[in-house]
Length: 405
Image (tube, rainbow, N blue to C red; front, side, top):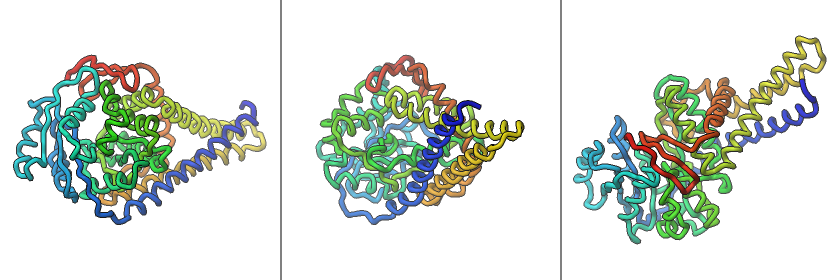
């Protein structure tokens, strides 16, 4: 079964990483809810909330209403769409007149040719802001923020210039019992648990904010001109160019409905991992190595124990112990991630529980699928997103290949 010393070293390394993963998940499930419960200071800089939006689904109207009902006195909403023919324009035209004048603005960005349509929409919205808008906040239209979302997202930016940007994250909530929804819920929660310490945190485009002046001085405006990914590019500019910190706000964790089948999950996961590989190669390699090491240790220890039992060799208990310990750590790690969802998004706990098997006993299967999607994303630079096919040459160089949206 190979060199026992080498196998032992690999197994030991993975067990250490598994303990670290469990500790990170436990921190996420215990510490983050306590941080989220802290009272909010009464500081309210002017904010322009930018929402790139396309189309209407059953949740769109409620999501827009949740943005209009924020417990924040000094903000306005800029919705950016590709075309005036988009069905969401009629919905916005119905909602906007009932609000304070200037509270809601709709910007028609037109089709993108040299960058992602989302980034194109965001840049069109930013062009409508001014120095009076001290903060730029970005929100995805498919998220449903709680009433204090904007206040909690903006507040850390008032702590000082060392905070370059703030971010929330999503927590997928299964809305059907299809196993693909359980898989995406677990894999996404694993990523979310890595948010926290500044050195690990990256911005998430669905809920992020920064000072308007910093958006230009950090070079983000220039870097977005031919970019596909808004958040990876923003993170790079904040952390690498400006040497500032990205602050994770656990209270800005938003529930995102998971309604996938195997085909749509593969399309989503491969697209996300391909963008990660092109924009943040080291992060993609780390994820690939982690999945490989976990599965190799789990399977090799199981096979070694089985082989020793069949052949009557002594010492079978050692690989068997490695297998059982690693599996047990996977279960407690998954349980901690699920508990984080309960504590941070208690209203969605009933739906989160649907993924209980995948968080615990099914954790190895989630890792196997993660490895598969990572490998699928290892080659190629073309990405299809909302009916538009892009070619990504690097982080800041994108071209639209075709548009069938």
